[in-house]
Length: 306
Ligand code: SF4
Image 1 (cartoon, rainbow, N blue to C red):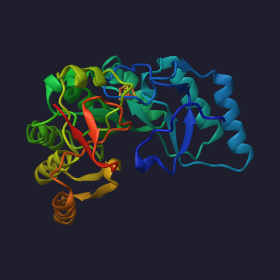
Image 2: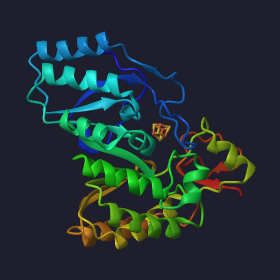
Image 3: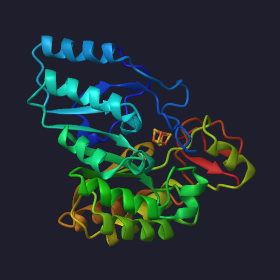
Image 4: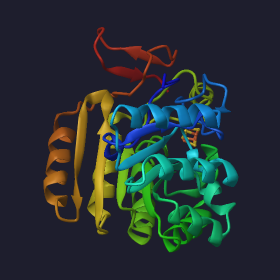
């Protein structure tokens, strides 16, 4: 199947068969997100999805894990999602798990029985965009949930036999609030115990609504060094059994391991990179077109003129 847009999935899904069932994200409102902003959301016809299943089976494919794309696939209407899951069972009866991204709302709008049915139909891992541990940050970023709603949704999805995985984002609380966010997030993650935590540390884009907040001063970005310090503060406090993967693509740094077993090793890697990351303000801008930024001597370092 020709893929439209950007392929976006957690690293633990890289070996899964990626089956798009929609184009874009039905929510598409998180202020920082540019993944699907350029696409008009639409559901792919069931015939097209079946064609793809047929094609893969025809070339001898027999995937054990399938990831349904794009963003927020769990928000599809019950009937349609059930039809897709049944089609997968029909073509690939050996498939062990079907995973996808979800929002808190896509869980809250379903009954316990409906959630159990998805568990029975093979849905296993739901990746939720938790992002922050602070309610005011979630509201500012226009996430579709607050902490209380997330706690309740996670309790219910686990009760229905599915696995909770969390996407988080260092830097999301802005300059000077990294430690506060890390402490709140650690408490949330220790209580909700996701199997995986993926930290896609914040990237700043010109095309997203957050850019206007940067221009009018209502959001002051944290530097990459602050984001690393925030991550260290988070890891120090995490004591649940979690497979953690943290990406700082702008400075090409990644820290991963199983917590709490690998905590000391991970902290030492972080300390090392914090030690060599310049105190100079370094921001992970995708495009250096923000007027408040000035490139230092043509290099990768951006000065933020607040
Ligand atoms: S739900 Fe996910 S994909 Fe959709 S806008 Fe928010 S962050 Fe982006």
